[in-house]
Image (cartoon, rainbow, N blue to C red; front, side, top):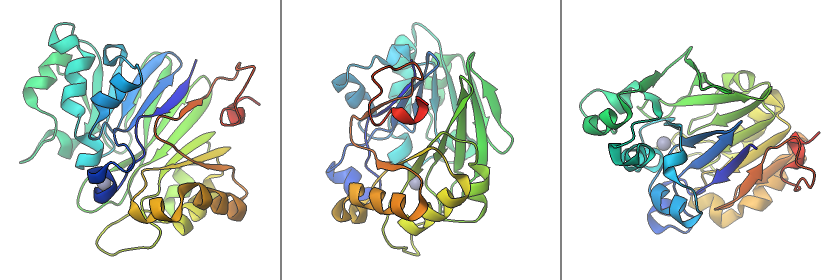
Length: 269
Ligand SMILES: [Zn+2]
């Protein structure tokens, strides 16, 4: 069985700080492998609330070092490895999460996973026995290293466009995805922050043309405007089926799912 579990859908400092929406990233179960993507604040708590056992994790991936994507990386790595007593799992993260003056991944925690740490960068590809994790492209997000990622499994591809300002190459790099998760943090551009707005998402979808687009990581502007309404507007303008993620939403990706939910149907055909 394969599915995406949205532990949280908060993006932007105010929504994360107020927890109007939960934060914590996404738990991907793909072809039997459990992958934690961008474990922001509250990830461990959300896993407990949703009955997800961190010891089942095989891999943790960070798209970039910002706190709303990485806050719980250390505790989740510790939990993945049974408190360090049962070393297992790997961590994939950009170099600036690991080295330099201010690494977000603690060095002593890395020993709990036997230092199985891989640097996410252009050209990166790593096989996890049934899932291949591929760096799709480097994004443009303030002064940190941030990447778009593709997960290939069971002959399908799930894509993730993390925080970024819009530029032309994103749609092209994200072609071939059946599902595409996009962090749409804002409604209007603000020079101080490099984030996608609905028009940017539309430009990406017109080129990438996934079977389903899933919007998440909502800042205050999007929360106020209504993520669902924004998703339907994007769908109308692009012809790409688009939904807004909800906290705790489970999106089944199983082809064999007979009673496919409306959310899961896209992979069921
Ligand atoms: Zn960010």
